[in-house]
Image (cartoon, rainbow over all chains, first blue to last red; front, side):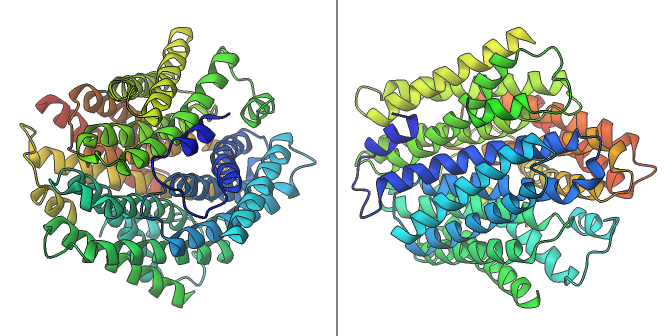
Length: 134
Length: 134
Length: 134
Length: 134
């Protein structure tokens, strides 16, 4: 079991009605996507054609920031606020969609964009599945 | 002029149709609210009655994270994506509303919660005004 | 291979003399520790004896923040600056040591603190090994 | 008085021997520098000569991350740990020095780099003064 899964198991109170499998998947997807987008922004920055990748870099940076804060919010269960969880998941799904679309356009040329687009799709999907289960 | 204002003035491309006054106000409110919420979580943690403030601490931490990532997204203008800006502002307004409501309940007892509730209201308002102007 | 490993493999320039295995281990440990410390702060907040865990919560929050920023710095390779990498790794090793020591004191009572202490030890170790290899 | 100053004044316990004026100045400098460096990375990304500014962008992003986490650590006073505060301030001073030096090289060409270099110098100085007072 991952450390994230162990932390969910040892939370001392009731997690409520939330789907623990979907929650864990979404937390892990957010942290993964935050790392990958940070690395993809930097890889784009090191491409010779960086001037053609500026929108991609910007979207990567946004997606990294939104995934990082979403992963943190989802890691907290004390005093659960459904309105906030929903709003944060909606924003994260949008950030992942924007970044997945943008990186997807460069996927055939840059392997890092292909890997990043996949991480974004996984995270967008995980956010939408968690949203649907709330 | 603040450093945030100077950075907006020296951005080398067109900022587009965005209302620069509202944008600057919102960036500054996000960074202020992120700092104040971080400090309020810690102040609550140092109260003797911390056991009664756990939901407040959690909401403070969420609001700090969401404001920090929103302030960063708003500080970027390259390859502007209205869908992402909107989603992020909606989430931030909700985080500030949740935290302002929660801290507002303790405002008469804890000065730090009173100051934090005010910072949250300012930031929520700044997000909503920027949203309305997009 | 993890997404972090794939991103290192697809970085378009030379990574320099850095030990790629140690680098990947350290990036992954930083992101894991950031998540676990965020969750441990929240689990402590939900313990009945929260009043006895306030230093632990604070140290968790600090460690989460420092690990998150360190994981991001290590995910970038463009224009490598050894002075900065060293300073950031030293701070992260210290944050993990402080948090591992603190959580370690509660490990027999709280499973989440035991798991968190282990994540902190792994991350501290990964930082020190990367530092030694620079 | 700024909201940061108000939060320091309303912290419910003793702040200890720390120099409150230097602490407030350092917290504010960290949050300001985090915003300015985020904006400078984006401004560099929108320059036609972005290919010559990739090291500057990377250093900006690192400095933004380190300043953000340092500003958060300094905003907490519960269970103060001098070892951690020192390590974090050392890393932040180094990040600001690296970024101030890098942006300083472009200051005559790019106003945003000139403003950013100044914010980095202020923050480096604030970190060193707080370090010296601990």
